[in-house]
Picture 1 (cartoon, rainbow over the protein chains, first blue to last red):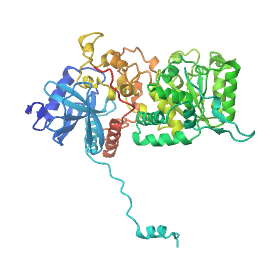
Picture 2: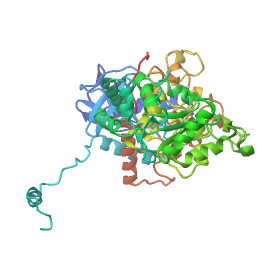
Picture 3: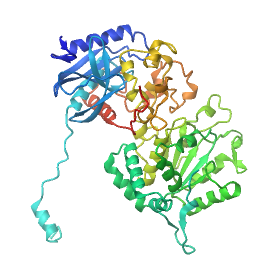
Picture 4: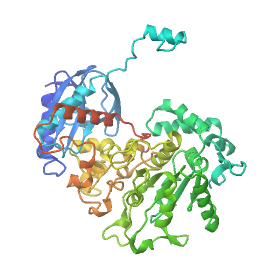
Length: 161
Length: 381
């Protein structure tokens, strides 16, 4: 995994998992806010407009994650945010930085995650969220113009006529 | 301090006619508010309701054409912090509009009248606007000893509350007292202080919890109800979704530290100075539904976590009986997370259907997109 100036040139899944596993074992160890049925998993990382987007399942949170890949990603400090226009709508991501990962941004989906029964459930929801994020909602297409109905109205005739 | 419209704002009509009331806009102009300021208020309200600027003309139109709705504001067992919050709404025009124009006809703390005169106004509003006024309740009625622990106008508050509620259109339960009971209902609750929805059953009730609720949330809720003539969308607990749909934790500016496992370990340590997450110091942000981390307080200047103290969860039911403010959130379930729409599987069933997962995901995405109130990160490091 090579990151040049914080921009990942290849899929960052392994790197994300390594960093958050370390956080899990070192800093989050034994905290009751962690769901012991869950473990760290980075899911579905893919390029999106030059940068990387994916989902993170951890025993204390499920987030959407963005990492720099050469797109519009800005390295932000804690407290700063960046707005992203995904096909499903506009999302505000928070900035953060972590040794071994560099600058990253996240958008919280669930935290705490104690109500997830197991890892499969959490990953299913995270996967579905990523699909939902990148899918445009179906547009409400107006019904095609009915020529007959149009003329009826235009000529002031009753529909039953 | 506050300009008030004459009680009722009723135009003189022939005896027996239905009273003709002014529109909000008419009263507003009479008070010397310019049209420009009025439109500014409309756009501010649209934004704080999360409706987007496209809704501003709709709000303006409603305020221009609809007769103003009187609001009766009763006080039970409470500390008046809700009123204190309400009159400090960030936008100067908000308090002008809401206090003066939206016909806050009876509020024993804010009104100039007192004694028999005040009670006469209450009777007049109840009579003239039967079935059409909004009842805002701050505090709650104590039921023990036949309600003797809160006496107003020489009789128990519970009687006044029930009588006034009988002819109202809807009830706003201001603050945690009216919504949940709050500290006066703390075990063993000697006065049997009881939230409004447990004594009034036949009216729509909207809960705006918090101790106190955020001023902008209060004015936005009132304005929404007066503008659209309906309650905003409520969650299962009866709170407006637009302001209580997210946890403090979801949009907390210290959230990146939580996710990275960076916590304050004791007060005034280096991590505290670096603004790390306050979860280990008892912050209830992960289990508290409110808009403090987005709308913030005092014109968006700050909120408790930004000031270095954890959230005490003052808008959650039973927060006063759930141990110390400094105890860590351990039993997540007791704080009501399970009662929220986040619930995924429902049971410990191992397999979750794809449609259930998709639904949970869509709900989470919608919540993530939601922009509550005016995010003004002023005063931030």
